Image (cartoon, rainbow over all chains, first blue to last red; front, side):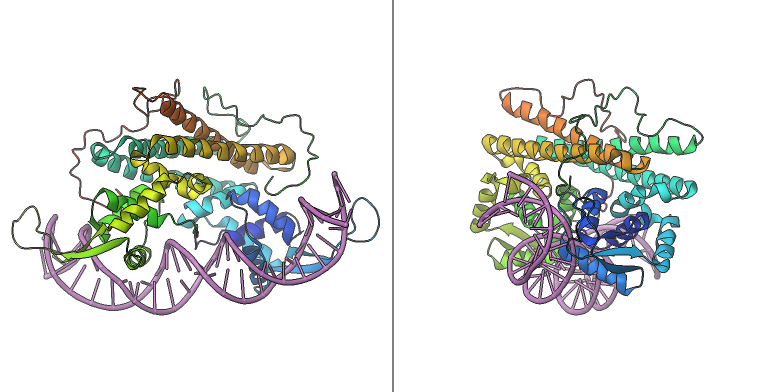
Length: 218
Length: 218
DNA sequence: GTTTTCATGTAACCCGTTACATGATTCA
DNA sequence: TGAATCATGTAACGGGTTACATGAAAAC
């Protein structure tokens, strides 16, 4: 898997910055946040938490936690983790950084997920960095495409074409976001743009009253 | 990165099935094929080649190879790899397999890249498997989306929305491909469909006469 | 003549998954 | 009562990247 780049640690810090949590729940949140479609393994999560504890960025407090219903006693003792002062400082520092690392494939997602806590300047710088990173990639792909198109069979060609389209789409998405960031005061409320694109996006299962049993990655 | 699932080995087998190559060139082809945007490292490639050799699937022949131009002598001795009979057999077996493994995220790309050498039945089964895999994922995302939308800030929401749209787009892409596979005899020539989507796709740098210096991933 | 590209490798490290181990609680 | 979910971990393994090492040929 994508080694390097420490996407897990900042993600954990970020989630714990919002609210303290125990490992099990953290994992669920992380699965959503990271969007990696194979669930994060415990063999990865718990050692990481340990690491963060040993670095003094978080502490784990053993709490039996009274269950909302049933009123009776506590369920199994769970370890609720929360940020320390140092951890908070560390996270804020991560948030304010806007170097190339922030817009590489691995990190961009996490950084974006915490844009709500990132200041506007940094946000814009990251979005623009990401954009130029992608257009640069676009150039490379187009070049290779034009250089090798006659040697390729239709499927390879189609795969290439589709990949190209994906990146183009992503650039346009970024354009929308950047526009939105620039037209700061009372612009359209994010996720409205992309005119004439008729994105049906989220709608299925519209009526569900949010009471489904909490399931893996759901 | 994405550990497991052996995407490298089949890819190498497949490329060598088309034509013998030395490691350095193989890497370039692999970078295109795999579409992973960080170039494959030699520290990964050469050991893998070694593994394949030890398994008897490929052999490396030391050849000085006379350069096309200059007519004079051979450049540095390079090791040209080619499939053995066993390697060919192995690859063909991989090609004919159409289990769930074939349509998981990691493998689908490679499998698709070799569709030109895959029989129509297998192709269709893989495409359909992939499709149902994605729609299944779509359901999961939509559920979680509807369950957590009010608790999320606009950026997290937008990220989620964008992810959802990406998958939806991919499903539609698959629909086109499946249609195409089904309407076998003389259908539209792949990559034409997606009506009213006006995809500008490949065009930039149209005139380049394919003589640019071979560059990394290009 | 120097830089870039070609060309092949090795060893250490990182980080993630798999598989294993354990046990409480809740739901059918 | 038995299955599923909650909850926390450990150890082995795997495979990829980084960094290192080396050198020839081509391009500038």
